[in-house]
Amino acid sequence: MRSLRLGLPLAALFTGVALLFTAPTAHAADTPLRDLAAAQGKVIGTAVTGSKLTGTYGDLAGGQFSSLTPGNAMKWGTVEPTQGTFNWTEADQIVAFAQAHDQQVRGHTLVWHSQNPGWLTNGTWTSAQLGSLLQNHISTEVGRYKGEIAAWDVVNEPFNEDGSYRSTIWYNGLGSDYIANALTWAHAADPAAKLYINDYNVEGVNAKSTALYNLVKSLKAAGVPIDGVGLQAHLILGQVPATLQQNIQRFADLGVDVAITELDVRMALPSDSTKLAQQKADFKSVVAACVAVSRCVNVTVWGFTDSDSWVDSTFPGYGAATPYDANYAPKPAYHGIAEALGGTTTTPPTGACTAAYAVSSQWNTGFTGQVTISCSGASLTSWKVNWTYGAGQQITQAWNATCTQSGASVSCANASYNGTVADGSSVTFGFNASWTGSNPVPTVTLG
Image 1: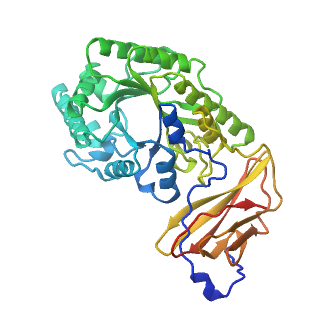
Image 2 (image 1 turned 180 degrees about the horizontal axis):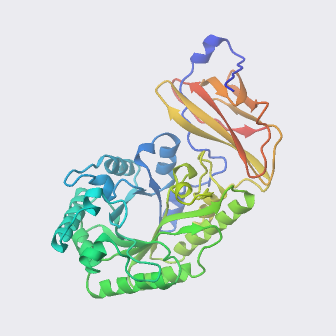
Image 3 (image 1 turned 60 degrees about the vertical axis):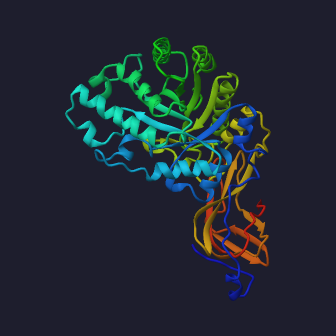
């Protein structure tokens, strides 16, 4: 259904200009996450996709976080898909965005068993050749961004669950010395960058994390440049390890920094208010554990919105793993992070339905937006969303809702088929708008 009813002459529809919405703020923390983290002496980061760093996605990535990790843009298969031919386009884009928004960049990742190019994994190499390829790759990539990357995840996922070394092209061809060599080469290329070993399922004290602990201890004793460990923290709802803070502290006691590098908390779908409340508690406890240890320096979420998460495609039946929903509305998990960082939030009360804006595309004279009505602990059988424009913006078309505009006042009501919003569910309607001049974000109310 794409219908529009406007209380204005047709000619008046096109006298306004593009309304560019930023993230909904009515239910966000009073202070951006990056400022809350800075007050605690911490960095709060997110993994990002370079091509999405515009509109609401870009506004949130730049405004809420003090560090960016390229989700895929710095991996070997992306930057050197053909031997000797490098593609830095997306990596450069993310670095430039971070610099423009006064953010750090966490380089990810230099040595991994996955997402390597076919020419590398399918080749037949002597140990000398393989070592030369690895050194050249590290020297080239780290050297390119010398002075621009705060920290590198140099070696990624070197261990099996039992603490033995993972069988990879690197371990099989070079032995365990590949780890020390990779760190040494990275340090030579950029002595100022902090160098990490990063792995998953090492958040609590277990065989795998103890193997990582022993490796770091031995590297430190041998004088190998190792500055930190990354605990990925791809977690399942309700399963934050009880020994997380203890584990962070024991690594810190070795004299290295610790970072939570890839935090998300996946749940069995569909989500509901109970699961979202548990997810909030999980995010809060992870961030609080980092806050409690002085050498835990960074918490990075692996994507901040459910629309840019790896979970749904990797773990069928699971999802909703990040602090923002797919429409960029902050979830309870967002407030859990803020609270762990010492912030106060205006979380919607229990049993509330809320309306949130998102923008899906924009251009020089207009944009396409959407509003999502979500309920948690409550339900609706009909709904109406109201706002008042501040600079003459005009809606030109709407769908999945009946929208009227009189002067600056806009009111959008449900269509005949989508008035019911059950507890834990949501409905979305969309619209196009035109603009000129300024575009202040209106205050939205759900009637």
